[in-house]
Length: 258
Length: 311
Figure 1 (cartoon, helix red, strand yellow):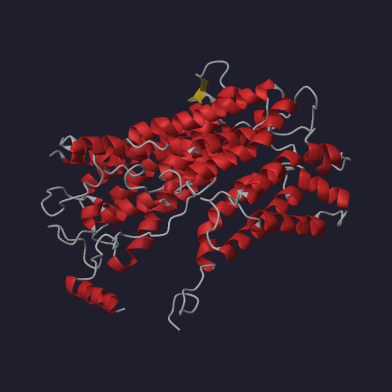
Figure 2: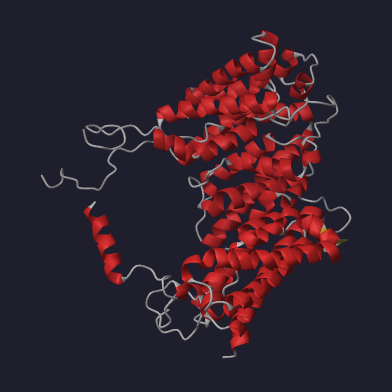
């Protein structure tokens, strides 16, 4: 399969960071008061994600394993600073409406998660596309949530009034609880579609999350779940491994004795 | 011999109390308040009540169709609809009332597993949903006879209020909260039939009186305290919402803790909060704490120390 395309598909649909991996919930819930804010946040994150993935992948043989997290943070923080300065210069309105959430991209767990689980153990080009795919998935999700919230909470879409004249905005959707409602509903819809395809015996894994089952016989590389799965062909980088099977058994025995 | 030995699985002792019966008793107990609301605010109050009940029952019915398990007949949706309607101002647009009913049943009750699984009182959650969504429509307490601020808002602004009118219910407010007499009559019926007991309402009201007396800034002035007691949704909340079987603690000590917590929170919201009213948020917060309260007030089993260790 085409590696770049596969990565994009993985990020947009299969392992969508918001709807499937449930990562980066803080910006997801906080900035999606309108479709424009959601899109802006998503695209900003995408730029940082793609660049940091690319550079971490390039540096993966240089970064010592033990200090990899601080090293990732330095790379990510540098790109966030660059992006924020650019936003201040060219899109001051967006910068103002996103506010503190731009600097907070540094600690966005999607970026750190992709660095850790993909970019650190894969070549640069797939890593770049992994970042773009994940970023697009994030943008798509944030724009969807923002669009619903803007539509119900303010009667607008991308700033243009679309609802009929007599529509009374349901203000709760513009506030924090509304973000949870909309996110929950969108995740529910997505799960309903997946479950239906599963029941009908269709290849649901095409639109499924981190594929849920049979990691052993999967030819896919760089899937998040697979990364933490002991049985896969591809072992994570040295030092990242979970305790060996023997150690796991010891732990279990201890628990049973209690 | 063999005819007299009946073998069956437990439970062997059954109560005659049914969900249906309890819900019917609550509906009956709310009738005085509903009747007074209709008398006080006119026929539109009846329309609001009917629309809200229709929307809750219809939502429950449709969800039952989808889950292939109908639960409409346990009347809980009727109680939710009625309680929600009593918590709405009479001027509310009907579609908002209906939306509140849908939210109460669908989002708060059915999605969490139906009656018995809801972590919040559905009617109150829907009231707060509407209050946050439509702040203007939900606080427009205007009708033919009494226009303007609710007694509580007037009290907070430092004006004089007529306590007698508040007790009989001739004031502005939501449909069902104005008349203390009608609410207490219904509550007495519930107390006599044993559907509720005084633990939660009693500890709630006593704590609230103490708290308002100490922190209210007017001492234990009887006029002020009785106005606080008779005003707003305190009576409706204490007797009909805080005692909801699903969202109150099961343990007896826990019920006292719950009531005391509600009293303190209501006092804080009313005295220190920006608004004049705080009963609904206090009860919702209390609902969220119920699992914790139950955990710390769990009675020890016979032969065990507290915390489940064997003695």
